[in-house]
Length: 126
Image (cartoon, rainbow, N blue to C red):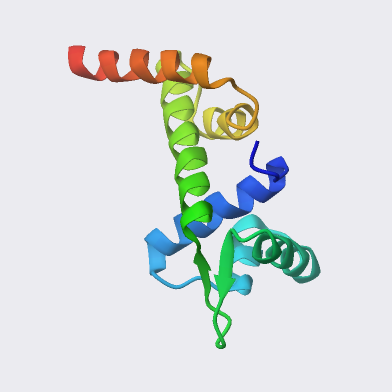
């Protein structure tokens, strides 16, 4: 267990995505991306910092620590694979992504690895 709630994992995933997209992440970027209030994001960022998942430099830029990066990449991979699996079953992309976001936090490692293998095998056969 990583000591974070589902929402904390969502924040880390969002920071990773924003970092890939623009290279620099600040709290206001998270506010806009997640459509949340500034106080909510400020509180969450403080928790992530205190738990050692992020650092914040003097200009307010947010960086994932090694632990934060590992967890964010794990959650992001789960999101991508689960979205792809659901879409392959005929679920539209928006619904698949929303459902993947809920599933990614609760699915066991064993089940996720089986889905991941299935998705990869399906890609190879295309």
